[in-house]
Image 1 (cartoon, rainbow, N blue to C red):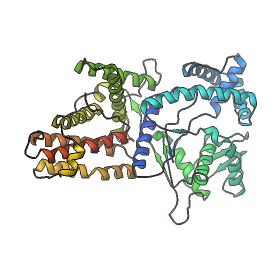
Image 2: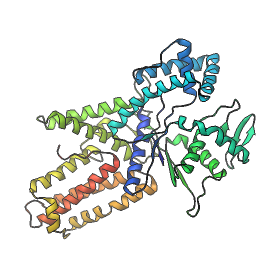
Image 3: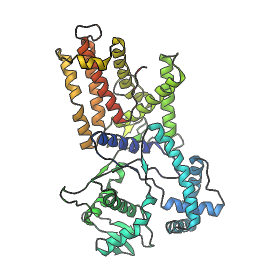
Image 4: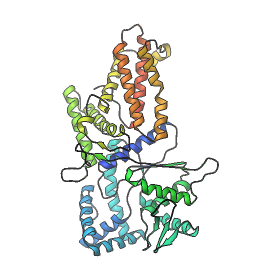
Length: 454
């Protein structure tokens, strides 16, 4: 089970969601390539305090919840949040409204469903652009499990009452995990415990991976230790279930501060993708003014979105990194644009030969004689190790490093070894094609669409 992306309903996806979404997608792709049965879960924030706040605000102001897009909901959220922060009486009513929603009040449930649907439509547009597949299973899915899990852990003595709240105290942690609040309500720690229980009991998970920002490490350490104390993580014969928190750092602006708009808001993910695509469109038009519109649309999307993904994935995920359009769209250096152009150039070598590679592969064989041929052949053979290293470490930059090294090794080979028209043309064409195929597989694992001509 890989739990990733996880935006909050009634809020727009921002640059922070980019990291969880594409790191999680790459980990899923690599696991699936290794024949693992992967459940890609989107633990959407569709339950909790913000809904009490939103529903209470709408009911008290007479606002409608049938917002046409998430922009309307965002304004609604800001208004409700301001009241929540400034008005103690409203804050109390909002918290009671959460309890009313959790208890299944029909009017509250109807408002909640409309808010969730509006958000879901906008989230899916982003996932479609990024070509990311997820199964939505929000916090609300686990609502029926919260009370039974709390009762089970209380009855077994794992959870104890402290100041009216039901808590799990674990060794080495100063703060307990709060399973049930003193007012009888449940928080996100309760949901995370119920989610682990469901994933183990119903999904039969052997490995559960959570992809969230590094700031949540302490929370997940506490959840994992609580699950261990509950005795949930032992499985017969195979040493137990593996739980991993895949943390990541912040996206920074070029000024080294958290990446925000001039007004101080976090950068909207849709605007970031639009800008990258528009810049790539201009670059492609400069080089190929005669390109038809369909190909231009496809190429600018592939290059723009690929550049954004690669610029993130090439960093050690635990590091903060500076977001720079100029750097990520550069034709030189370790960028997706450079790699996509390199792949297109390699595809052009095969086209120029006018040979059928499938037929050639049955009649010819690769002969590695020159040092640069041997170096390239060896680098191609290291691909399985790169994938295995990525899966074992849960570090996508292991794969980007391999892809860049492979491309550089190919360029050194091509600089010294003539391909088309050489005495060793057939062998070298097969070596070129092998390079291209491994590059394409790397692109697929990274969620990048390869381009064949630019």
